[in-house]
Image (cartoon, rainbow over all chains, first blue to last red; front, top):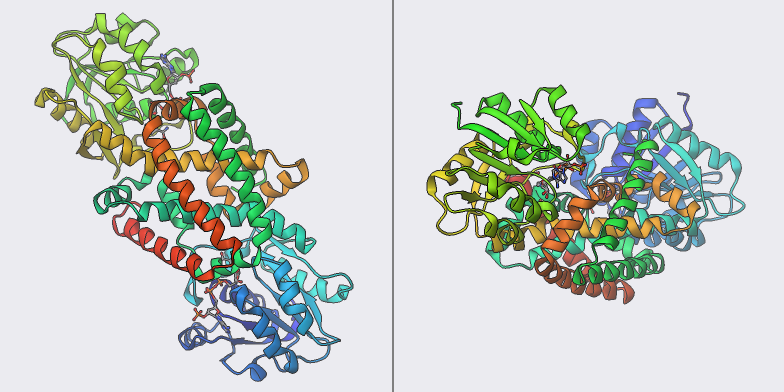
Length: 293
Length: 293
Ligand SMILES: NC(=O)c1ccc[n+]([C@@H]2O[C@H](COP(=O)([O-])OP(=O)(O)OC[C@H]3O[C@@H](n4cnc5c(N)ncnc54)[C@H](OP(=O)(O)O)[C@@H]3O)[C@@H](O)[C@H]2O)c1
Ligand SMILES: NC(=O)c1ccc[n+]([C@@H]2O[C@H](COP(=O)([O-])OP(=O)(O)OC[C@H]3O[C@@H](n4cnc5c(N)ncnc54)[C@H](OP(=O)(O)O)[C@@H]3O)[C@@H](O)[C@H]2O)c1
């Protein structure tokens, strides 16, 4: 692939940032790739792995002259980071990100960006429960979706360049309203994580012997939840704090449905249980058909 | 391995029954292996696969002369099946099962069994979301646990033979009180399934366009729940109806914890969220250490 950007700066060289860095290196998308990260171990690791040309904790050095700046830290850090990078952005630069919520990103980053800088927020629908630069890999985005939520009036050329980068990563790009993104992800991602954290938390409150048995016999279903509930605490704290309304709304629906099911179990209403359990199978089939399984 | 039983009868040649049949054939554990199944397609398939010597819908033919009879149908069918097989059981026969609940099995099967027949209920902690004889495979039980819950006074020789069969399948056998089994499994298996069914059910109630997007972007967490929620509806209906008290008790704890989390999100209490999300990571590590991941 041809060089898309003379200089790219990735802020946060963790699981997602380092995966993107690997793609940019592999495909030669940038003339020069620099990372800004507050974690000196991660900076050293990124250099050792050869996935960036330079690693710094100096904002001016990282984003000065950059054609593309990608925020890849927990979304709670975005407001301060945006304020810090803004004075160093060059005219014509593109600012993007990989955060799991999008309304809050428009709110926290948008107002800081100077005239002449394009803003193309993004969210790759890919990731694991692991963190840090060693957890990254270039194939992470292959065959996955990447959602972009550029605010109205964003230069088309800027959107096209960010799109080209994600397509090079093997993703299919979808343009969406930020509010809609947050509603969809509240269902597909934020609620599942909240539920998984809760059920694993419930298990950690059990007496010690019972808890040991839960670990022992986890293969019967529980195990799948523990993988999700092993995701990064700070990242997920920031997601829930920054997509509050959409999460609370879908949580309300979920709680109503759970209460109905609880009642069906209490009163021995087998038909209701079987009907729901049959309905949910169809969704699995759709996911397999959509090749997302 | 040496022949453990001259004749074995497996009632229900589905996912679990056919996996056990494959083990018995592979290891030569039975002189003769017969299945009783109400589904003629499954009987034909089992014969075609060569995993049983005979397949019938005649109770006397199946269990007459059998040294071991294993129930491997949904637990809601057990009471009627026990009544039907009882008159045909020979003296010294062992009756076992693979059902996912154990108190209800003692209640439904125990009273029907004549003097001179041993009862060794069992539950292999292994399985997938698939059903039927083609979904079975001999390695399913390898490296997994199998819990046996023989009632007090069961002949040790009978327990030892059933244990030997599961050890041949590659499982580690654990003896447990039925009530304790049901409490542990309510947490590790039944609650996770209930939650997964609920969340996928909540998604099926969304408007069509939103639902399509949920399928499209399922890789962000939701997907893992759909696999669990694709499990057999009848089997799971029977599990919830037959482990009602333990499931309702643990569901109550879960709901309290979820409400607390909901409140923390509503009031922006980031510390509480981060504290819980950090605590749940430890359980995942224990599961990996216990080699159940
Ligand atoms: N993981 C996923 O599955 C996934 C999927 C899609 C999108 N996302 C989004 O991607 C972003 C990053 O997630 P991740 O999983 O890649 O996290 P990660 O592995 O923890 O990486 C974040 C990196 O940024 C550093 N950092 C944190 N605060 C910083 C700051 N103020 N300035 C500079 N560097 C800072 C971190 O250092 P420390 O480790 O010392 O904090 C770490 O090196 C999040 O916004 C998340 O919502 C994640
Ligand atoms: N699947 C798991 O993950 C798992 C794990 C551990 C334990 N278990 C337990 O194993 C048992 C069987 O589950 P499975 O997944 O193997 O189910 P399955 O694949 O649906 O197999 C059950 C078989 O029994 C047949 N059957 C149903 N009712 C019958 C009756 N009254 N008389 C004779 N045959 C009958 C079924 O025919 P039809 O298909 O026509 O109904 C099917 O061939 C259940 O008690 C379950 O709790 C399951």
